[in-house]
Image (cartoon, rainbow, N blue to C red; front, side):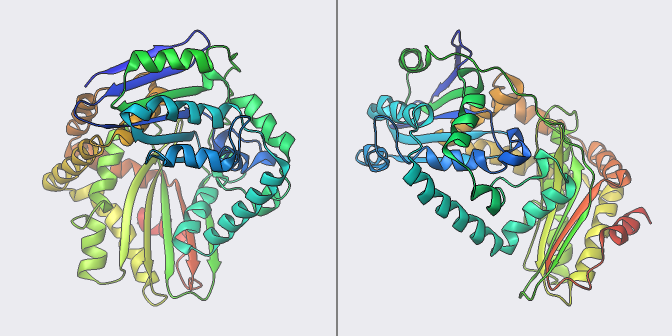
Length: 420
């Protein structure tokens, strides 16, 4: 399996990987514009635009978009993140040209029918309402805002209801004109694909487009605060964040191994100490997430009002202990989990297409999986302990609490416990 990359004169990058033995393929367009690229008054428009892409083009109605893909048994979808928006489809080999044509059509030629805008506005407002009714979903938005207040990195992907309620056709078209140029797009395909054929089709579809130039991101500045929402719920929801590394940091893989050992599975420290030994919660985990210039180590747990104080204290204790006695076996297990996860993910053409697009956007190239595995394997116990010590010593933390949490310790108390 070989990754092939072609860049058109206008900046469009086309990356493919043929996977022998597969009868299907995943093809999509990743646009390097997401929530971080919005100005404050635009918050939520990247996600709104993602929705509108499926509501009709100059050549296809909303129903025709769905039918053309599903008539051949295919699947089409999209998502918006803080740094990218993706539109992709999964089809059989013979239908790849059609899928590419549909994806390109919805990205390049949305009509933004005023009636459809109003319909989708109501859908998104329902989505926002649903997220507010899902505590273990909304708490992560609140945590993000607490970590990065009053800046693009801290704003939600969905946007506030009052903004979404007022977006106009001109607002949507303006965001497209500003960000949806060929130099901000990556066409990625994996599976039963022919690179040269896709390049020829892309030249016809995209070759005439003019680049729009890159948009400077507002730098992310970690400030770290507390968000506490007291509500009569069955569970008390706890989410703690510590500032992690960005994609270009030398600590990137160390942080991922650390988070996996801390709370990445049933054998992890947090799961064993807090759930298995003490029975303080049903769900608890830790994860590491990274962005262009910052990152976040996140710990989440759901517990009862009676147990929230004990859970918070034990979590701080485990963070401290990891810097002192993280074992060789724990680090080896975390490395194995990470490598297995990477390799298992590569069995899916959709995962490969996304991986290639994300790597191109971040590093301008697609590292081989062997390179990533070697970097994971190079993470030592001493490196993890050192990172854990620097992490808790930095004092850079944020906290979100939701539910019956009036008596839960606050951020300053948790910081003091870490420093003790």
